[in-house]
Image (cartoon, rainbow, N blue to C red; front, side):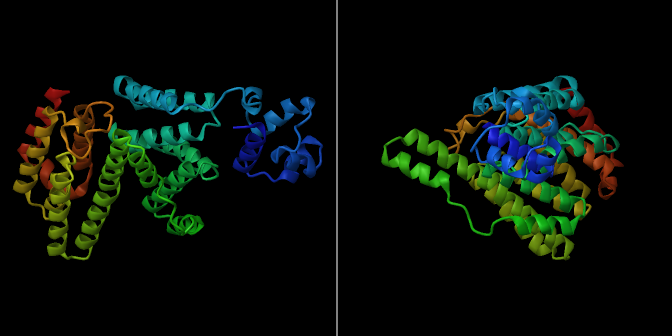
Length: 353
């Protein structure tokens, strides 16, 4: 990010107008406009005061640190996750925020860190009463990214913030953010890139692009929509529709070679709603058996060209830890907690940790 972009970005993040910045520094609003449009640069004597006003150090203001590469961002992200696994969520959170302070203008890093921290609260079963300060910091990250000049980062920040507003029943705020989003669909860059690769006979690269598109569309969008439709059907008392949607979701996971866990999770949700203990424990047992298996993208036809980072075994342990926590804390699943089979399943899980 160049110095003019840093000044403009930080000013907007702080909610300051060009005139307010000018008044605080003793210059004209025209001068600030010229800085931000790269027509000229601030006088060297103003730099310390400008940096303090914008809440950055001189190195950041003068852009001595270049943007991080995707590999560097992925490395920092993995570092934070590994820290959480070894020393707990709080330690991983502290490390992640240290990276944010070191690279405050790298929006792609902030977006990655925000996602990891948000997921970490769930996956590492942070007690509800301890989550508030973490959530406030994560919320600050995403609200800052709502003004990012990187469209992908900005769209992701809007998605996360809107989801949080809905979860917190801040419906008017969620609608306001939705209304700010452009209605026009963006060009499908991945599909065009794959087409170009095919034309250039770069088939391996084209396969990876298309496989990633199928995987993330199915795993993050289609399956999520099906589970939401199933939830709506349950809320409306249309249990036959809910069961059909569970069938479609399960078969979709099988046809599109997703992790086997996805075949059982919709049925488990329905079994909990119907308080069918035998069905719940049968499904939990099948899901538990997946802990000993390491699902590999390389073993599938649809995703074998996608590089796989980390092992599913570790992810599934975190997932099961969260399932046990949710069942214990959810009033809807008390009928399972009171059954001796639940304690037995927990004991089996603890032996694997």
